[in-house]
Image (tube, rainbow, N blue to C red; front, top):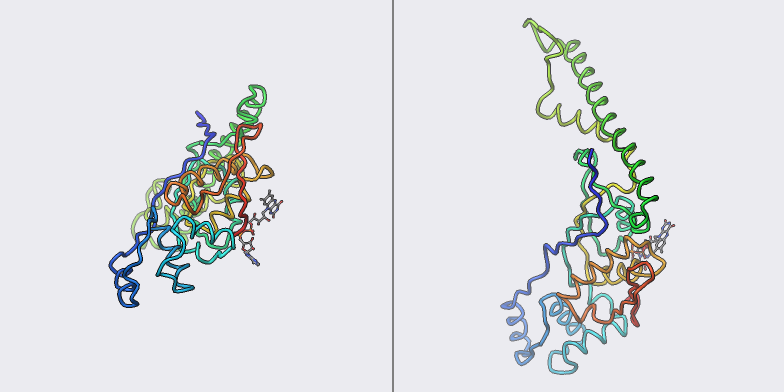
Length: 284
Ligand SMILES: Cc1cc2nc3c(=O)[nH]c(=O)nc-3n(C[C@H](O)[C@H](O)[C@H](O)COP(=O)(O)OP(=O)(O)OC[C@H]3O[C@@H](n4cnc5c(N)ncnc54)[C@H](O)[C@@H]3O)c2cc1C
């Protein structure tokens, strides 16, 4: 089997918010705030600004957009930044990374590739940089992956065979064949839902030998407050390097859409080639 090795995560921005401008205009007109406008760079940020101004009905002046958002971060007016939400598809990450990622609960939603339904014999694995850069370590790593991968494929096939045999015996016992001649029982193949159920049962048991390095894909929805918390915890120098890379990649994507919600972050290069993420305004 040729093993595909991945060392960098990919983040695809699939969704972001759209402001319903007509409704905002209607609200402003209904409340005699029609002179209010904002120089916000994105709908995500506009929604947070409007949420904050709703608290004080301050649509008649005051701070400009960038200062307003910075003030929210400074005073930790956190609920206002929950109104910006993004949908990300993350690929090229290991199962050990997603185990850590999904510990972030508040303000997040996840949908992850199922190892019960999806065949894992495609052999894609995420290699930690410290192993990838050392030929000796890399060889040991590959050897171990080849073994576990071969075991997975063998187990999945054998389990599949075992379950098909069981299905044939049940079919025989059930009398579902009626008075028809059965012929060669080995030709009897499950189809439809039964076939899917057998594959699922085989894969869910065989996956027990798959390593933490197995590549996975996860759909992540998160709001700006949750994203900030994630970026700070997992961009820390104490975090694991793979998830630190993901924190940096997510920060890149979100800061493009919402520069004022993520513009306070500084990145400091670390000896392992990744970047630590720091801010003056932690845990908003
Ligand atoms: C460097 C590092 C090492 C770690 N090591 C381990 C480890 O060895 N073992 C381990 O099990 N975990 C470990 N973790 C995971 C850690 O304990 C958290 O589960 C994870 O970082 C998610 O953080 P959170 O709970 O603050 O985030 P979220 O779930 O996103 O919550 C955000 C914030 O909301 C509030 N909140 C959320 N849920 C509740 C609640 N139920 N009650 C009260 N307040 C709540 C808290 O203020 C919380 O910080 C580690 C994390 C890091 C960054």
